[in-house]
Length: 210
Image (cartoon, rainbow, N blue to C red; front, side, top):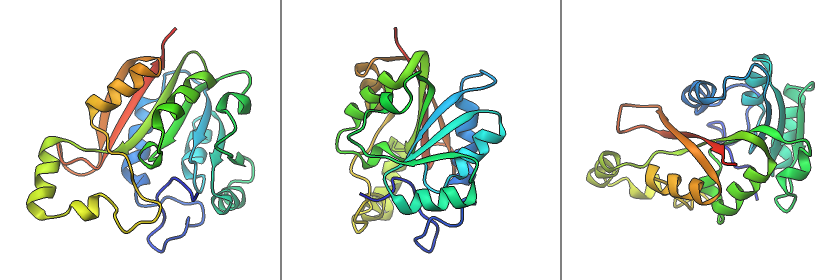
């Protein structure tokens, strides 16, 4: 399986710098982080490490995980002082951070997973009491879907020709149900990119329920 993050326009991971989706996603993620001064963050699907570097500069401790060894190579070259590891999906997240994480972050990951509910359950197990999961995924809402239909852009939206593309499509309602079922509460939604109700990205934070 390849990396679960978007690529640079040339299909690479870039050189560790900002990729196109970072411009609107990173500020939205930072806004939704819990207010603690120093967080221990597991970033699943960390890609080239740009987001990890932003979080580290804010004072947080970050462990970057990615399925793709090439992504981790770029991460390590660009940010040698950060912790980046190739992630085997069979390894429980809780085993990577035995003392518990404050945040499990997954940027543009869950839409690639056959079993996102299992991922959320694993994320909950990796969190400390009152820890949070922070997720981003492509936004899907009524007006956007209507516009996609009028413009005939469903093949593009569904990434039909992308071998490792999106296989799950979330609304706020389905995301809320899945998070609740996985043991999360205090669910907060935000959006980023493009115009209101035609947003590119759904951003959500949820707390591990006791």
